Length: 134
Image (cartoon, rainbow, N blue to C red; front, top):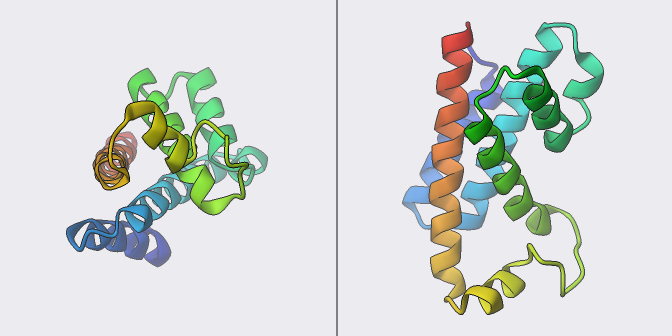
């Protein structure tokens, strides 16, 4: 059983992808991961780290060894992709879409679609892992 907010974020991340809203997919998928993993931490008595954001949450799971390392890496990648969309970054910040476009010499729409696919795969992995732990 997941909180209603988590369920809606999960569903809307999928819907956004279907309709080509890739930035929204990335933001919502990372929100789901943060809420779901943070909620599990909170339920297990780690309230402080649960409220410190996705980087702290992933760091805790990585240190505890309770999430597969590949999933921790995917979550960190997703967080770095998401951050320029939700936090103001300088133009030359390496994770900005413009900088990634210049580095890869790829159209931003292609980058965003790949980002959204990673976001959904990571979101599903978080949900499956959490269900297996229950």
